[in-house]
Image (cartoon, rainbow, N blue to C red; front, side):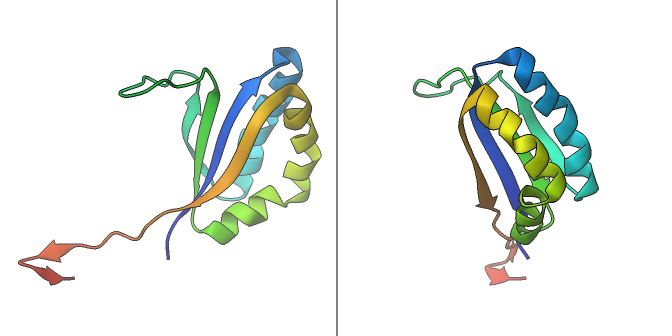
Length: 107
């Protein structure tokens, strides 16, 4: 089964208010089995122009686990803080399953 990823890309408009969200969410993520893979603003462009935004990538065991986290009572309680203190989006990304090749044969 493919992994599920909670992807966030936002511009923080009210850092003081956003801090309450930022400090609350890691415990909610952990309670739902998620692991923060990327968290911050230090994107280094290799090509093109990248807007100055905060990006977060959280890995979950499945796309369904991302949905369970997002729709949980705990996350929905803090989501309004993010919506009021930032502009941007969050989305669910679905990973691909790894396919190994050995001498031209699929394993």
